[in-house]
Amino acid sequence: MDGDAPDTPSTINSGHDPRPLLRQSARDMKPKHTSPSDPPLSESLADVLATNAFDQLSNGEVGYFGSSTNHGFFWCLSGAIANLGYKASRSQAQQASPASDMRGSRSSVLRKSLPHKTLRESIQEYPSNEELVARFFDNIGDVLPYVDEVSVMGKLHVLDEDANESCPSTQSWQALLNIVLAYALYAIDGPSPEPFYRRVINLLYGKAIHLSTIQTLQALLLLSSFEQNIRRSMASLSSHSLAVRTAYHLGLHAPPTYVCLGAEEQRLRARLWLAIVTQDRILKIAKIVSVGEFSEAETRTLGINNAASFFASLTSLHELTGLALDKIYLSNIGSVRELPTEHLLSEVLNLSIRLDNWVNCNKLFGIMNADVGFGNWTPPSEDAERLAIILSLHYHRIVLLVHGAIVMRSLECLTSVGPQFPSGVTGDTIVAMLRRTLVAARDTHYVICEVLQKRPGFLETNALWWICNYSAFTTCLHSFGLWVLSGHISDTRVSSIRTQKPDLEILLQAALRNLRTLGGMSMLSSKAYQRLQGLLDLLRDKGMDFQHVE
Image 1 (cartoon, helix red, strand yellow):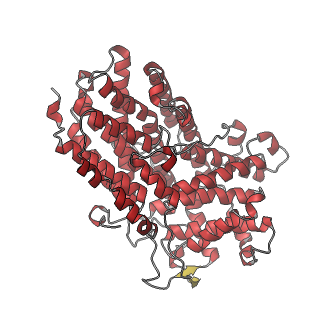
Image 2 (cartoon, rainbow, N blue to C red):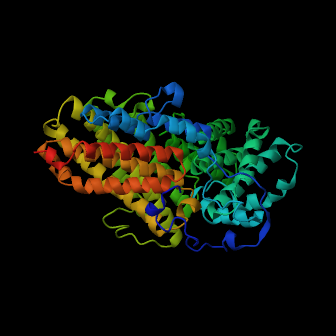
Image 3 (cartoon, helix red, strand yellow):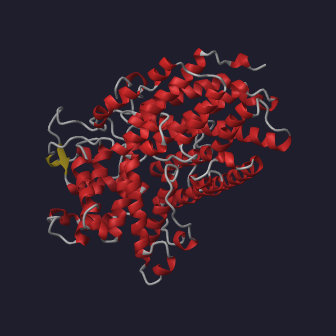
């Protein structure tokens, strides 16, 4: 990363493999052929444009971001800071957000590659297709368990067929196979996945997309996830939208259509529908795409093993994400400020209780937290521990989503009402929710540090970069918001948070370092880091400290 080496944990770019796999690592296997001279993967123009959402530009220029997004929280935070009287001079603002530099650097940023070795270093060789498929199903296949290894292995021969002359059904299989190979290459940090990614795009946006098959849907789901993790999160929305359309065409949203199918086909379709819903819940934090609700008929068809149990837990967890988006953030159409305070607290409290119940029902996997790690839960295997870490990150991120509305409302009230919370139960509940937000921010930071510092290759082999990077940004925003509140709220009930202001600043600084490390060459993350660091420097320069509060 450009100039980021001092902040980067040594494990991130380590040459060591992650924990041992069931099979031999693909990077240690004999290659099949040399890689062509394809340019490395880069960010899409949509992601570059979304970066400008941190500047005061219209929705027409950058697109719409709802109140549940990190962008929405950022503008609430920066607005509160400005309303408190902390305003940067014109020269400081230009230094913190140089529009001319952004325009000038756009082309160079687009040329930056993902952390894959370049052809300038050496002519790299691709492992065989069989080896790459094996690698995919050894790790990523557990996290995205809606593609069957036996079926994929049995169809590798269709890659040799001419895509221009083959039928749409064959093209659907070719698209699925190519995205599996691309994801496997991404995970091993070897030759660039670009050739395979290009083929997938050409196939899915050609004849294949007009034929609604299970393979087309599988390819679109994997493509959307892949694009999230290669810093093309905005582009992934298009792939997800097409996946939703394909799922409806196939009737996956209607369990009665499963009756005449065999048990294996029922399980596959159930997982695909749950994958659609779960991915929609995750991406709905960025944009709005309507998908139907969960169904008991779908969950009953899931198999019993670590991957299936993880997937079932993840989908039930993201059902709460959907409720938070609908009930608290008004489906990202409205704003949290539109809800009366009592109504907002009621919804947050209800979802907090449901999150606690989810943890109590999550018997197969533990949830990591900053105080005790996994606590009394002993991982039965390395595979179970790996899935538990992923689940922990999703859980803490959703806790922050639910409670973020309270932080945003508190920041707005700080400048409109004053440094006192409402009296009685209302104020007590707000303070309790802020304390829980602080705990969740620390827990999220703890899990991210666990991954970055102790588990090399974990993000790539578990398709987790986008979630981890987004969560790092969310942690920065929440810790920043709590830090601002701790320095300005005089309400005695907030003393437990106010006395931790120095620790909050340490958490904020550490979270910013993680964002800088994780974001790497992501233009969006780099801009987010730049703006937050600029706000922090501004508050320090203006003298915001603990002594402001009596």
